[in-house]
Length: 433
Image (cartoon, rainbow, N blue to C red):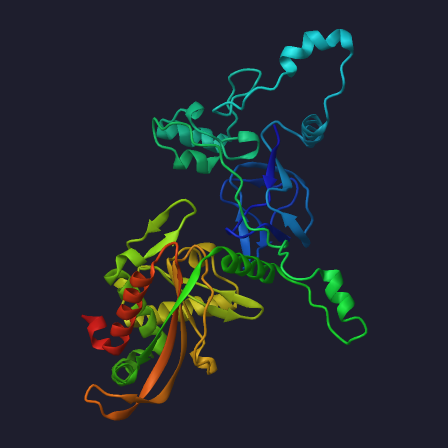
């Protein structure tokens, strides 16, 4: 029967998107992995691949359509031997409500009309046929898999390529997929209503700015974060003079290679190593449990027009300063062009937000769930300090604030983490040991 192609969720926060461009037309034959369309998400414009094979029978959503909800049918694929006529009959049979039967027939038809629980595997009610794409059947045959033991994630329980590829021989049926509990991006109810605000400024000169997907998501996620995450804050001053001298020496030696390290590169490295030194703080909140990560996957906030990204530097504790610097420059550049793939800005257990380059002395950052903490970094400024010998001196001091999720990290543990970050930055040579 015809297979519906649904609007995909291309990021964890995506609830709707814009179908920017179709890359196929009706009548085209597609295989699994072929590009179907370009979808604008809350973060970027991404290409959408087919997960099944067949012929494009009908395009249901036109190019340029905004606000297409996730899981909305956007096209229909036909299998061999099917025609466009099958689309209408299949849709009608699925959508048409059951007509009220005459009383004389009700008793005879009652058994078949009674609701029955969903089967554990995608088996047709009329027999033992298993609904699976031809490609999924071929892969299952090659891997020696029993399709009756695989739960389909496609439309109406249809088994598709990814279901078979992720299955293991002899595996029990996978649990039925549940709808992603994404936050209601457009339903941020804090504050007065739109009508109330418009009335308040009636007669004043203003420009009304439409919220794009990214701004809606930022509003929803950060409102949720402040309402649901028990933040507490830890503050330290860090002396940067040794780091600045060491950085100048390294940059002079790396000049021939075209490498120029920033203070932010050292901060990333110090945070990554601190998460290894205080492993209990390298954790995230996962609803009814915590996940304690082994690698240091550090996210760094990057400001872009209209919002921000937090690309993740994975295994940051294992990388050299020059490697971290090059990777961060690449991620930041592609973030500003909105060219990051979802796996490049998802995950991580810890984040850094640096506003020092804007002259901000200190601030408190909002935790980006499910992270356990975020470090807010201010500018390095000359300040009077009292040395170890009691003498007054002048030093370059940077103020930092660690925002901590108390469900994941308690006060003493957060203090240990922040102290490890401070020690790394004040003794930069040790970070290379």
